Length: 400
Ligand SMILES: *Cc1c(COP(=O)(O)O)cnc(C)c1O
Image (cartoon, rainbow, N blue to C red):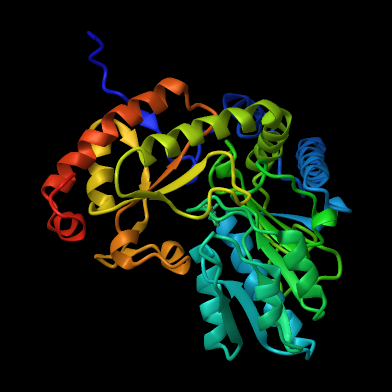
């Protein structure tokens, strides 16, 4: 092959996605000619207001909200997660019901950290573990709920494993104790059936940049009547729940991004599932490898998390990066030390196994050829790393 252009193959769609050009097209005019403030009363402002409310109506309809006013646009998925956990728990506690909060132990840090904050404020926080298959079961939730429980938050699809949680059952179990149920639906949106009324959730958070929209735009669904302590005060935008002049271009883009996701799911879901399964089957052909989370539980179409024993995730990541391939690992470099992923530890992986994991996520612009290249490049990298690995030798003897 004479092709000398360096390859650039993106297999990390769970981290972020490129903005679809159709989404960019609806976004740009709001930065140039349609730049009005939606609070202004003249024509330019009214135009921005109409665009904002049209986006809200589209988004609300596409998440099955009973009323568009239940959608609050935010500045990130993280913001919605923080607002829901802190805002609902504090407001519900103020109503006198209790101070017990339940989250799952494999939540994103955008949920874990606010829950830790609540614990410091005097809340009792239970971290419920998923089972080894990567699922949080309603019967396990029932076992930890109390009369004093005010809030339960369990993510819809786990960002590292791709396993999809039984949200409808979890919300129902929560309501048996008159507590409120929030879900971080950031990975699930546009990839699994999502209807707020059907699921019976009280709150949910979403983010645009995981579905081919821009970074820095999110939404919080807050069912009417859900207690909520307002965290951003000022001009009273978003029904006084989140002040700050709205990012009209970003919000319009978010609504458009979701419309495209839903319009294309019928063909994209099976295509991505097939690509993901090729990744899984290809990696599992190598010895001493495993899929994390059970294979036969509900899963996102594009996400695979694999343990490759005896090698460091970071080493694989860097070698793959050298070949132009972007993937993620099961470790996070926090304060200079490599901690194995709390998600993988939550489902019972030993730290030394969790260290050798890769998350591969395919998406809209992934081709069969991308997966071919990944599966061609990975085995020699692993053989090489294992040959140098004292851990691998100790685990399995000398054979690679
Ligand atoms: C990406 C992500 C977040 C954070 O969203 P941002 O918009 O990046 O702040 C939170 N939870 C999950 C599950 C995510 O995948």
